[in-house]
Image 1 (cartoon, rainbow, N blue to C red):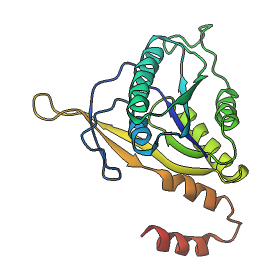
Image 2: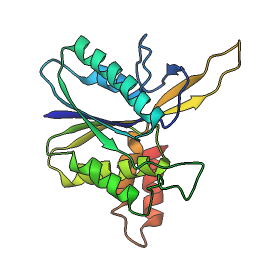
Image 3: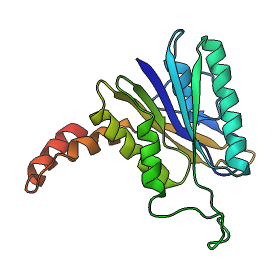
Length: 213
């Protein structure tokens, strides 16, 4: 059984934040990458591990990726685990110039990203994902890919999906912080509701009320 850790890196320079969570035990660890908490908590000596990270090619995405990779490597060394690193290259774009030759985004960009993620997953994988950073269409495509592989692969399980919500602190009073939230239930809700047929809304509303309240 392989363990796969998937995330997208920030597109811009990031601030140092105080991480907290109601859903996960973070201990006294202060990681920059939210996915690092899942990596630290879920790898053991002898595990087969893939770390799959999506990043753009410009300065800050690459700097952030290298910083995250160093953090991953330190965790793996402490846990006595070896891992394979794979990077998905996000098409570059110039946010200040719509007509720039560097702007490579089009209608197929995010569908291709879905395929790039799905192609890396195989039967028997246990998946941990972070959908915090990157363009929202990339994180949506990642969620769709996770839903797809959970159904199409044999014995493949999405163990956790997290989102780190940033809150700006008050200067001199409270630090910038991020709440690391477990959003795995959204994936399973989406998968469950995909099988709903026309005319079932009333019954499904009652079922969802029972499940969610």
